[in-house]
Amino acid sequence: MSRTALVTGATAGIGEACVRSLVASGWRCIATGRRAERLEKLVADLGADKVHAAVFDVRDEAARDAALDALPEAFAGIDLLVNNAGLALGTAPAQDASLADWKTMIETNVTALVSLTHKLLPGLIERRGGVVNISSVAANYPYTGGNVYGGTKAFVRQFSLGLRADLHGTGVRVTSIEPGMVETEFTLVRTGGNQEAHERLYGGADPMTAADIAETVRWVAELPPHLNINTLELMPVSQSFAGFQVARES
Image 1: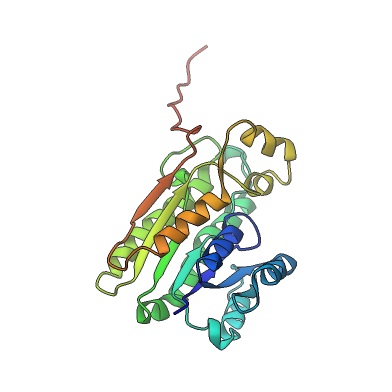
Image 2: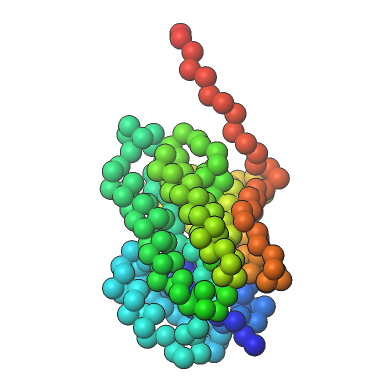
């Protein structure tokens, strides 16, 4: 029997790769995002019987609810929620950062994630499904300029653990996946489209790929139902933990 996953932020990167990986493994997917043309390409590539495009901004609860209410019958029963939609904006230290950017990250990475999770929980409990939240190593290792982005991802990690505790006995599985460097549009979004910054970060680093993380999500989702991965941290071999900073008097 085919299972159905809802993947947020499916227009690029990890989200798109998750849809492709899950469909290849026999799942149906509801792919959400703001860029309709990219979701339509997923449908064209993978088939309308396998992928349903739900175009909305995760921060817009009214649009989200309308899209979910309009799901075709074949996609209406959701077995897996992949909370992937999220972003980082800016690299400045806190004292120089944009408050608008901070609020956008909180609204997207935290508020939208918990709102969608809350809406889908009754059905996930009924179907003994699963939740996979995409956090980040930034949840565990602070770095200069990470400020609110790291804070939002720490929330996602802790929220995942709290969900796991609250859902004890329901059969619902919850996992926080915490990737390090993955080459996607992440840095282009963070820097306002700075291709040089993108190439400087990933060049020669042999970073992880969106497909690497998507395969991890699929593996977690398809484990036997008596197993739960609580948290899973991944880095490319080329990346390790940052050293401490020391400010010295000149």
